[in-house]
Structure formats: structure tokens, C-alpha cells
Image 1 (spheres, one colour):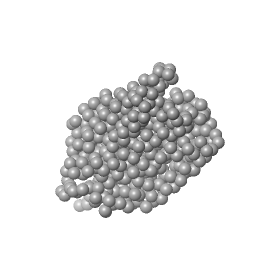
Image 2 (image 1 turned 135 degrees about the vertical axis):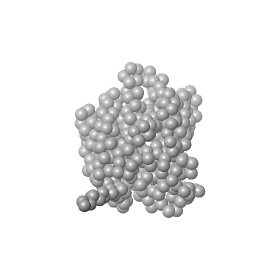
Image 3 (image 1 turned 30 degrees about the vertical axis):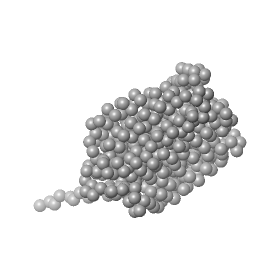
Image 4 (image 1 turned 45 degrees about the vertical axis):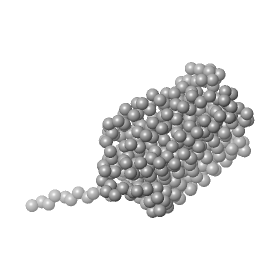
Amino acid sequence: MLRLAAASLAGTAIEFYDFFVYGTAAALVLGPLFFPTFSPLAGTLAAFGTFGVGFVARPLGSVLFGHIGDRRGRRPVLVASLLLTGGATVAVGCVPTYDTIGVAAPVLLLVLRFVQGLGLGGEWGGAVLLTAEHAPAERRALWSSFPQIGPALGFLLANGVVLALSTALSDAQFAQWGWRVPFWIAGVLAAVGLWLRSSLVESPGFLEIGDHARVPLVEVARDHWRLVLLTAGALAVGYAIFYTVTTWSLAYGTERLGVSRTVMLTCIMAAVVVKGSLTPVAALLGDRYGRRTLCLAGCTAAAVWMFPMVALLATGQPLLMFAGFLGALLAFVTMFGVIAAYLPELYEPRVRCTGAAVGYNLGGVLGGALTPIAATALAEQGGRVPWGVGAYLTGIALLSLGCFALLPETRPVPKLVAEPVME
């Protein structure tokens, strides 16, 4: 289990590195380089628009790779998704800017971001199911939380590389060529990921399925559509929180508050370190007290904390901004620390790869794709404190709370051990 969990963690970290490095670049440099004819605000919105395309593609990727995962196995999904995402990410680093090839530059950026999203849409389902279906029932949330640590590591790696380059290079050098380096590094990471995954064995949960679904998506749409919508709505708040903290706040802090790139990245990364380290703790609590219980608690905390978070961000003070980010990500991890066990348990094995992945990635469309764009527009309409962003996030938290309330608990009931009979 440890070797399997470690390989799943490394793979998700690499693929989310690819996805996050684009978000960081979109917040910092892609607007002026690929949309130079726009105003600074419009350029940022356009860059976040290409960022959002990756989320739109993720449900399509979950359908494509979910079909493979439910028909052919979870293991092939891990290899194919890693190749697709890694290749697209390296290609982003090679796209000429608008000054070189004109309108073809943002078009190519859009296409490659879409391909990135397709690959990542398959990654989560394959990695989580391979771990969850191997894990013992009483510790399923704990072992399944390892792939969920991957996004935090991927984010830290992506932003660590960007932070190092920002420190070492001048603004002109970073804008000219430095921003491309993190995308090229993705090629090396993809090769490492393929090596780690080459020895993985197929999930016993898949091997035990006697009658595989012929067209998994059709069965999911026919028999589980309500569950898909509820899980998508429930997960929307997690995506909204994470990308508000890691993407929108980076652009807001540097452009509106005048905080340096280095300070903003450091505050965000410090909060993500705490969030990643506490993921197994939330999972252990999920194994003990139930998945739904943790999700309801995290959702409630998110609804309460969104207004304080934007107020702390607006101060521009590093320690206060860190406190705001940390509170939001603690609410996030309370929910998402158990999601990798919760979602697979909600779906029957024959359509689990498709159903769980589609629900998970539709939540990304609802909460992740639109949030940086909506938050940027709402912040522009307000004063120094972006209360509109707080209201928007609180509304999403309440929506997700209602969806979680309608979902059942899935934690396996511990088996009672009979006491020995004394003779």
C-alpha cells in the first residue's frame, strides 16, 4: 500500500504541477504577452479565460479516460493521462508570443490548455481509484488521501520554481524567457512519473467486476445523474476556495495592492504547506467519524470564513494575508481530505471511474473555471476590500453545504469482534 500510495501521490503531484504552473503564469505574465492589445484588467481576464478552458476540458477528459478506466482498467488511465498533460505543458512553454505570430499565439495557448485539462480530467479518477480499491476498508480514507496530497505538492513545486526564477531574474528577463522554464521542466517530471507508474498492478476492485459497463457514461447519465449533480455542486466550494487563494489573490495582490510577487507567492505557499501536511489528519478523522461529517464541517467553516479572508487579504500585510489564506485552506482540507474515499464509495464499481471523475471535474467547472474571472470582475467594482468576492464565495459555500446535506454517509461500518466464550 505504501509503494502504491507513493506512486499515486507522485503522479498527481506531477500532473497538478503542470496544471498549476499555467495558473501562476496566467496571474503574472500571460496577459501582457498574449493579449497586449487589451487593457491590463482585460488582459488579466483574458488570461484567466484561457485558464478556465482547462476546467471545461476536465469533465470531457473524465468521460474519455473514465470509459477506458471502467472498460480496460485503472492502470492504463494513469499512463495515458500523464503523457497527454505533460506533452501539452511542455508545448505551452514553446508557444511564441503575440508580438511574434499575432492572434495565433492566444489560439495555440487555448488549444494546449484544453489538452492539459483533458489529461488532468483522467488523472484524478485513475490515481484515486487505484489507491482506494487496494486499500483496506477501515483505512480507505487515509490511504486514498495520498493522491490528494499531490495537488499541494504540485502547487508548491510549480510556485517554488516560479519564485526561484522571479528572485534570480529581472522582471524583463522573466517576461522574456524565464516564465517558459517551469513549463519545460514538466517534460522531465513526466518521464519520472512514467517510470514510477510502470510497476503498478491493476486494482482488485476492477478485476472483480464480472460484467463491465458497455458505455459507462450512458449508465451514469441514466442511473446516477442526480448523484453526479450533487457531487459536482458539493465540490464546487473546494475549487472556488483553492483557486481564489492560489490564483486570483496572486493577481489581486500584485496588481491592485502593489505587493511584490515574492511576498504573495511566499504567503500562499506557506498556507498550502500547512494544508498539504494536514490532509492525512483530515482523512484519519474521516475514517473515524465519517466522510459526510467532515465535509459538512468544512463547508460550514468555509461559509463563515470567506468575508474575514478577503478583509485580511486587503490589508496587504504578509502575516494577515497568510492567516486569511490558512483559514480558507483549513476549511478546504477538512472536505477534500476525505473526498478521494467518499466519491468512489458513492458509485458502483462498474461505472465508478466515470461517475466519480465526472462529478469531481464538473465541480471544477462550477467552482474553479469561473472563480478567478468572477472575482477579478467583482473586485474591480468595489473599494479596497473586495466584499463582493466574499459574498460570491459564501454563496458557493452555502450551495455546496446543501448538496453535501443531501448525500449519504458511506464510511464502512466497523465489524464487531465477538468475545471468546469461556468454558
